[in-house]
Amino acid sequence: MCGIIGYLGDRQAYPILINGLKKLEYRGYDSSGIAIFCKNGYSLYKTKGKVDELEKKISSYKKKIKGTTGIGHTRWATHGVPNDLNAHPHVSNSSELIMIHNGIIENYHAIKVILLENGFTFKSKTDTEVLVNLIEYIKKENKLSLEEAVRISLNEIIGAYSIAIVDKSQPETIIIAKLGSPLALGINKKEFFIASDPIPFINYTKNAIYLKDGEMAILRKNKELDLRKIRDNYKLSPIINKLKINLKEIEKGEYKYFMLKEIYEQPKTISYTLRGRLIISDKIICVNGIEINKDIFINAKSITIVACGTSWHAALIGEYLLEQLARIPVEVEYASEFRYRNPIIDKNDLIIVISQSGETADTLAALKLAKKKGAFVFGICNVVGSSIARNVNAGIYTHAGPEIGVASTKAFTAQIAVLILLSLKLAKYRSTVNENKYHSLLNELTNIPKKMDNILKIDRHIHIIKNISKVFHNVNNFLYLGRGINFPVALEGALKLKEISYIHAEGYPAAEMKHGPIALVDENMPVVIIATKKGCYEKIIGNIQEIKARKGKIIAIVNEGDIQASIMSDYVIKIPEISEELSPLLTVIPLQLLAYQIACIRGKNVDQPRNLAKSVTVE
Ligand code: F6R
Image 1 (tube, rainbow, N blue to C red):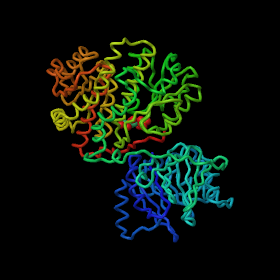
Image 2: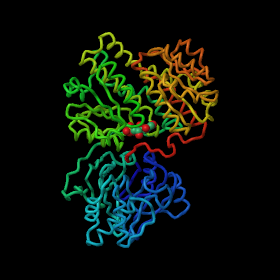
Image 3: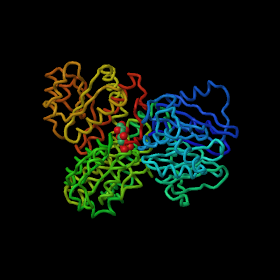
Image 4: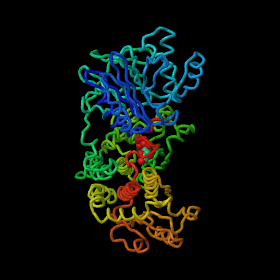
C-alpha cells in the first residue's frame, strides 16, 4: 500500500506532487508528506491525516515552495502508528538523503541493530528510516556514489519496496527502485514523473515505463534514463508503453463519491466485459487465453481459485458456476492461507487467481508459489499490466475500468461476468450443459446491462433503499443470508456494510442460522435475505419464517412479481427475474446501494474508509 510520487524537470514540483498524491490516496491516507529540492537545500513537510491536511499545513506557511525536483508519499501505516514522525519522506542521520518508500523491509530490525551499534539514531518507528540510513552508512563507509550505495543496500534487503531517494547535494538526480511494490515512470522529453500508478501523470505524458522487480533507474535532469538491474548493475533498455487511460474514467463527475459512480457504471462495465467475447449472433464465447490453452482446461481434474476479500467472494461464485455448468470440482482458497500451507499442487493442476488491482501481495505470492510448483496459473484481473497480469501463464482482463472507491463494486460484477463466460466456455468444451440451457444463458447474459439499469434507474428502488437506511443506520449489527450461488453475495453485502459504515455485519448460508447465529436474532436485528425465485426459494421461505418467529426484521431481495417472501418481509427490494447462475450480477446491486446509503447517513467518507487501502501490497 502507500502511494509514492516524484517529479524531476523544469516545472514547479509542488502542484504536481500535491495533486498526484490526491490521486494516489486510494492506496493509503493516514499521513502524507513531500520534499521539494532546490540548489540551496530542500523543504520538507509532513503530517498525520489526509493529503488535504498536508495542503492546509503547507498553505499556512504562506511561503511559496519553489523547486523543480520533488518526492511525495501518502501512507498506509505498517511500522509505527500514523503520526507526523512516521510520515514520509524520511531523512538520514546526516540530513543528506531523503527517501520515500512503499512496501515492507522484513529484515529491518536486524539492520537497525547494526546501525544503532554504529552510532545511528532513529526518530520514527518505520522500516523506511532504517533503509535510508543503511544507504547512508554504506555510502559513507565505502565512499560510494549514491546510486552504488542504493544498489548495494537493496541487495541486503529482504522484503518489498518501491523507493525514490534524493541526495540534497545533487538536487537534479532522483534514484528509484522496485521489488514487489508497483512503480511507474512517466517520461516527457526532458522530464520524469514517478508514481505508484500512471494516473497522477497522465495529464502530462502518455509515455510510461513500468519498472520490473529488481530494477532501478537513475533519473538525471536533461539526461537519458539510466535503467539498471539491482543485482549486478547490468544496463537495461527501457520499454516505453503508450498509456490509454481515459481521463473521464478517473473523475467523479456528477457523483458525490467514486463508489456511487462505480455502482452506477455497472451496466456499462458489464457490457465492456462481455464485448468481443460473447458473440451472440454466432452463439459463441471467444476468450483467447482459454482457447490457446484448451487442453489444459479440458483435462483439468480440479481447479483451485485463489483470491482475497471481494475477489474471494467472486471466487466462491466461480466455484458454484464451474461445478454446476462445467462439472469440474473447485476449491476456493484465501491467498494468504494458501501461500503458507505448502499446498499439494503440481504440473497437472489448474489454478485461477482473481484480483482487481493485480497487485495484492498475498495473491501475487500464491501465484508465484503455484507456478514454482509447476501448476498452470490463469488470472482474472482488472488492472492492465499489473504484476499479477504480467506473471500468470494466461488470463483474461475484466475491463471494468479504473476502480477508485476503496470498496469494490464494479470490479466484483465484472469478475462474476468473466467467471460465467469461463464456466460456459468450459461447459461447452466438456459437453456438460445442454444446448438449450447454453443458449438461454448466453441470451440472458446479453440482457444483464438492461436489467442492472432497471434496478439502478427506477426511483422506487432507490427510495425504498434510502428508507431502509434511515430506519437501520443506527443499529450495531446486521445479518446477511443467502443460499447456493447467493451465499457469497450475502458475504459480499456484509463486507460492503462493514467496510464503509463500520457496522458489524455477518453473512451466512441461510440454513446455517439454526446452528448458532439465530441466537443473535431479536427485534433489533435487521436480517437482509436474498430470496429470489430460482434456487432454494421454498427453503428460504422457511428461513424467513424462522427469523420472523424470533422477531427479526426482514429486508428481502425478491424478484418482481414475488408474493410469498414479500408478504412475510418487513421491507422488500424487487429486482428482475433471471436464471440462478446469473443472479449474483443483480442481487448484489441493492446490497451495494444499501451499504452506500447507510454509510452516507452515518456521515462516513465512503471512498476512504478508515484503516483500509485500495491495493493491499503488504501481506
Ligand atoms: C473490498 C475490497 C477488498 C479487495 C481485496 C482484494 O471491497 O476491495 O476486499 O477485494 O483487498 O483486492 P484485489 O481484488 O485487488 O486483489
